[in-house]
Length: 122
Image (cartoon, rainbow, N blue to C red; front, side):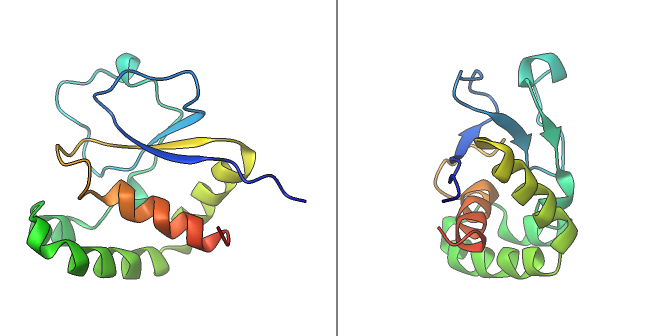
């Protein structure tokens, strides 16, 4: 039986936790106010972040959340290399997807975590 490693979502401004596993930043832009040392990243995978066009359209407007999630999933479907890299990380151990947005309920890492869970049959 295959082990199902955890996929967590955390804000990059939160300090690293011992159970984070691989810490992967999934934003296209480097977050303000965070040094590379403080971030404690394993990987910055900006290739899986929403496109600049989608990010600008969404503007972190909760009213656009469902449409954003659909559009972002379509972008992920069209990005097999980026998704495959994330799946390799998940297969190797726990993963924490990091985001910089202020809204913990409406950000790309939430959509991405659900997408990865579905892709691995979870």
